Length: 121
Image 1 (cartoon, rainbow, N blue to C red):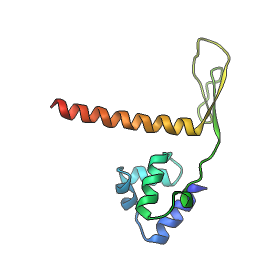
Image 2: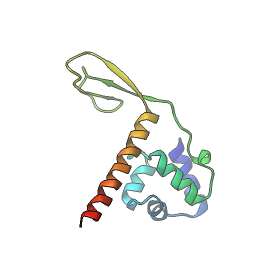
Image 3: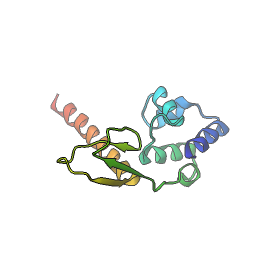
Image 4: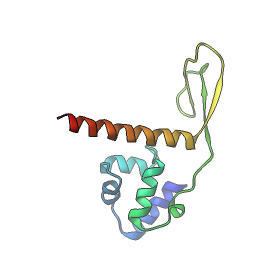
């Protein structure tokens, strides 16, 4: 698993979780959860970590082609999430790469909102 490789390489290179957290602009407790599978690491963060540790991205990260199934009939959370799409019984397979792109876009939008708020002051 990538996160195990990441943890092992971080320790091997002598970096602390705080240093990696600083490199991806987060706090150490959030990074710790990212490293131990509690929180997902988005592609942009993988790229920053690889650059900071001076290793090829492929050494710590390999993109998975797993999908998340959205089933509006089930009220489960985890690999399946429940959404009400007009009461129809549809399953939607959304590749993780699409979800990663959307998360990155959300991050960019949040940054733009923060920039616009600063300009407004």
